[in-house]
Every structure is written in structure tokens, then in C-alpha cells.
Length: 210
Image (cartoon, rainbow, N blue to C red; front, top):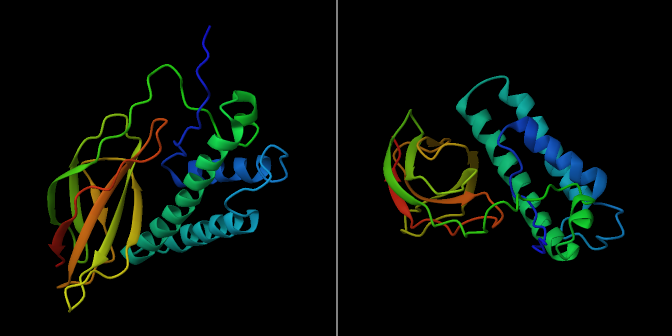
């Protein structure tokens, strides 16, 4: 008999539509559910992040790399909230499949062993278009998508605040946009997928934007 405990799937989808669908399922099912009395993200905050992403999608239709970068940033913020809620649901459900599914999250497949995602390795970092850097990774087994964080190196040599971009569905084409030409940036990548959440951040790499 299979006694393996159910685990939350961290595959929230890569497209804007799938991320929206995943978020709406959680909004409908998690809040007010007696099995989940104290969510780590409030319903108001999750709704606000979803609306912010949808607003950014509307602005993206006007074109431009800045609009795309803004939309990607809002999506990354929403995915971070879903990641936190998934971890909460995993603990609160106790591995009970029915209770887990009542949250609006999906269950991870139990057909394969849970193996931690390995830390990504950046194998190439080169210039893209103006204000853009393009990274390529050694593919991470079982990764569904990747996320990049980038920080500008200030004049005193200290990195500024991190900004999240992504998710990216290809390990060979991670295009980081919205960079200031002539400035030096530090990049790190992490992978998402499987039943183990996210990997550790990659070792930092630096690059001067053109």
C-alpha cells in the first residue's frame, strides 16, 4: 500500500494565464477554509499582487522592454507569494491529499522520488540588446522554470537592492532587461520545480551592461 504523503506541486505554470489561473484557484479555495486558519499571506495582499500583474500585462501590450520588465517583476512577486503559501499548505495539510487539494493547490506527482533541485551553474553571460544581459545555464534536472535576481553595483562597490525577474522557462535564454548601460550588475539564478520547491541561488556572476 502506498503510504507516501501528498506534497504540494510548486509548478504554478509559466504563462501569464496559468499563473493567473493558479492564483485564482487559491483565492477561491484557501481563504475561509477551516483547514487553513492562518495563511502566511493575506487574501487582500494576494488579490493586490494578482491585480498588479494583470495591470502590468495590460501596459505590456503597449510594447517596450521596460513594460515587459515591469510585468515580469510583478509576476515574480506573485509567484513568491504562491511559493510561501504552498509551503504553508504543505505543513498545514499534514500530507493528507484531500486536505491539500481543498486549498486550491495541486498535488505533486508521487511517481518519482523527491530529489532536491541542484544549484544552477551559469555557463554563459553575454550582451543582449541595449540594457539587456542574456544568461545561459547548465540545465537543472526536474526544473520547471528559473528565476533571476539582479543587483546593480553601486559606486562604492557595494551591491544595491536585489530585483527579481522571471520566471523563465528555458535554461538557455534568460534575458534580464531594464539595465542601465555602462553599469555593472550581479546576477544569481535559482530553479523551481518538482516537489522540492526551489534550489539554492547560483554563485553570483557580474557583467557590465551595454
